[in-house]
Image (cartoon, rainbow, N blue to C red; front, side):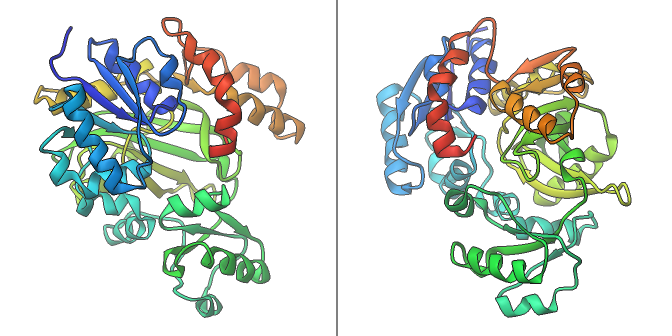
Length: 389
């Protein structure tokens, strides 16, 4: 099938590569823009790769988008972001960009509830969705009023600056002294009002789940749910390395409640942890864009990027079923993650080999698009330096 409107994918890492393959296999032309060397440059499915300014330079990036729409004939094309900073930019400039493109990111008044975890948690609590116990200090002196057992984690409500400086998503504090020192360190990086103190759920890496829909008009048009079995690093990881589809209806109910309250539109990943102390699913965060392992949905029978593309063109989309037990693996991070777990005695080699059996989707490798798999090895030093994985 050939489509008159193409797609612009902002970010050419493996998340973007998954969107490219999804759309191009359906006859959609795809242009990728990225400020860094990227995997999509190796893909035979890309119509064109264009180097762009850093999205954090908002004025320059906005002018760039205006220009390439004219130069490349991209007016009316569907825009897919692949990272939080691009989501932030698109949501803040949506009114202007909607005159040029079809923007899949909602406006800021909606996105802010996903982008800022403090607002996410307060919204969840307002509508009765469980979250891990969370304390919202505004100053280091407020820590003396915290009634929470150790260990705890210190996390930013807005991730981008904190992660860029520290290379970590959280700090872990095992006692009051560590809490005071790490809070002071976090306060030197971000505004103290953006710092959250949260209870540490036991065995965190073993109880992570996600519900991932195409959501519109307070309804789920298409979906998958999954257990995120391994991540890198294993505790408080940067990104998932091994994920498997599971059907847990409760995750859809909880996710629908919070997304409806936001009046959310588009693709997203709603993350939960199942607390082993009471077996309650507790809300963690929303990624308001395609996420790292979104191609698992395609292998499980739910082509989410293509469905979103069709919806942008006002075509009907409905797919309520997915295959359970399908696996997604990013080999370049899953192999070292598993090796460390085996060395620590937390996993047996035979268990790792067994986990790889069955229907599976690889993050980068594909029989009909082989070059990105080899290209990733050339980019690994850059990726490890810039992203930590």
